[in-house]
Image (cartoon, rainbow, N blue to C red; front, side, top):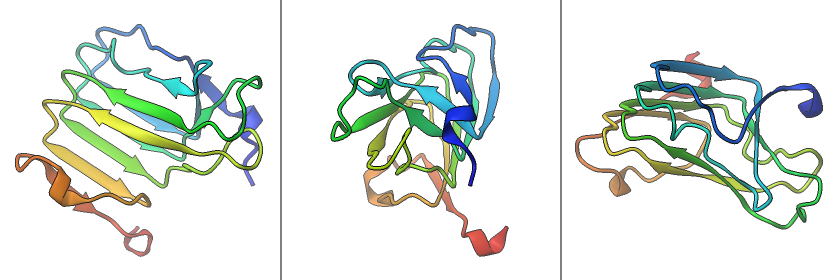
Length: 135
């Protein structure tokens, strides 16, 4: 099993305004004292984001019962892939967090390994499901 504590850590906010493409594999995303992270909102040119096997890393002072939020908020993001993300992991047992996605220009959303309801997405968003057996 991969040691969560040894993952590369992404800060709470990325200050990379010229970044267009970001591919994250096995990265810990640092949450604030309320259990929330919003690292992509300041990437003002970001169009493609790929998240695979990433976890939200909580501060040690945060109680385990707090539900965290990974906010994928970005005004320019058009393609989002979330694959095999470990939404149940934390720096120990009992973690719980969810994604909050706010991307007005999103046209492609690929999700593998996480539940979602396509009926709640705008018509202009193309949803593609991939099963692990197809990989």
